[in-house]
Length: 160
Image (cartoon, rainbow, N blue to C red; front, side):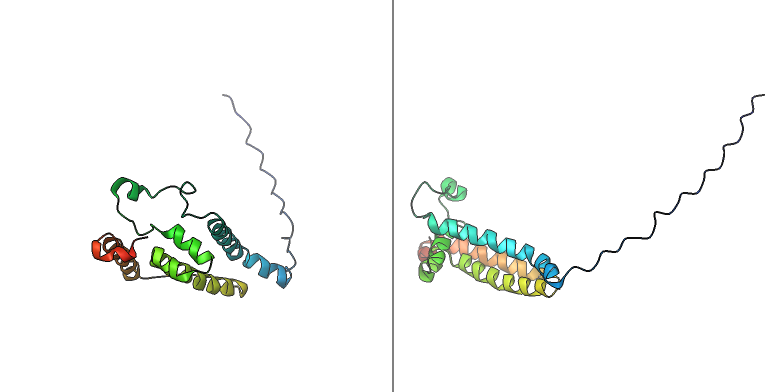
């Protein structure tokens, strides 16, 4: 009979030592860290508006054509958005509204939400947008109606 000796008990694993505690970061560093994301988003938006403001979408060849417009001849809710952004970047609000009014409303809504976001981030409060489904259905309905009307003869004023 082959008897194997019992395995020796393992020695206890020593504790890793006391946990290291970092000293609290200075308040200004923490605040800068909190506003980094909203500031980065705004930098990207300003860069995009700067590019669209510098490169005129009214001149052909700079931007791709809307696929829906190219395939069907119908304006989608975004058609005229670049021309609207170009006019908005140059301060021509009337032309921006004429090119795409919902886009201008989106620019204003973004600006308001960004101000709320940065102010909440600076104070260390989280930003959350909890819109009920009825709000999203309403926005979708407005955009669909806008798209249909701008493609009808009596809605030609809404076409870009």
